Image 1 (tube, rainbow, N blue to C red):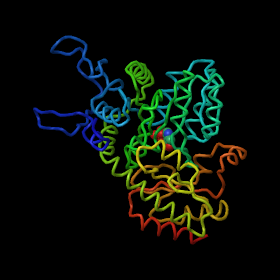
Image 2 (image 1 turned 135 degrees about the vertical axis):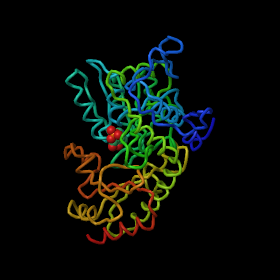
Image 3 (image 1 turned 90 degrees about the vertical axis):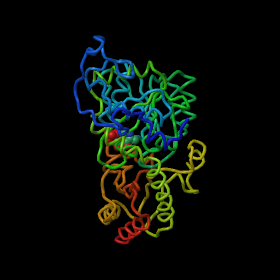
Length: 390
Ligand SMILES: Cc1ncc(COP(=O)(O)O)c(C=O)c1O
């Protein structure tokens, strides 16, 4: 089996020997000849499914899917127009009236909001704290489908996905693992028995803050067919141009993720010693309660490029820091080449009650940083300057 950095570049398998082209072209077409004019038979894609319309199959999208299936050690992959399109398609494919869906209280807000909105179709959404123990406890209660994120946001906890997946298998509960923050460089949920792995490709995989996309990676062909059909009906496939940009982005995933993780570690240590910082949340820190689970779960001694910290003071001081950086831009995404700072009370935790915020330890003085590819000394200086304003 080839290693991730090789698969990320060559895993699409595209090669037009006749024309000497091995870069994946953009197949900017909505339609294909159907039936095949040479044989008169229905034209099939390499997946063995109808190839007639780009809402169903597209060669550029397919090339990206082959790379992602290999990186996540899956049998197949489906690419979507956004991470939320992937999540919505997964929910709808699996839930019925009367189903119970378990999602973490601390997970991407829209993932949770959609789960709750499904109550209008008779689906009950149960929330559990991301602590592995509470999640395991709630699994026991007649759950039909569960979702976890490997690394949570905004408190950057590492969930023991291996343990959750093991219990889900025992109970026969399909488990969706959102692997967006950890990427296949650190962890492959399918290897531990997850039903599917999901990514917001918008983040590390595309990596340049210029594409919105999503993916589902599956461990068997039946799931691939079923989800393919749901994607077809929902019309949630990725566009060929976005697939092209994502193929270009994913080629450098490992190099980017490694540098971003190393810089994040250095910045976490720098902030831990900073007089204007109260606390730092990063699983790589030796003081982190999540360091041991991260070291057990992750393939590499890297801990991702996102960290959070509490400044001394409250909302006023946090906003002052947010406004005070120059290189680091203020916006709520992550995983791209630019470093980004977010105020979680206004973004990830916007819909949480005071009680929920307290339960998760999210305060008005909390900021989240996604470390990009800039020079780490410049980033530290930028943060130091902004922190000195408070
Ligand atoms: C962990 C996680 N999952 C899913 C999503 C949704 O992805 P998208 O914004 O590509 O729809 C996000 C978006 O921020 C996310 O952070």
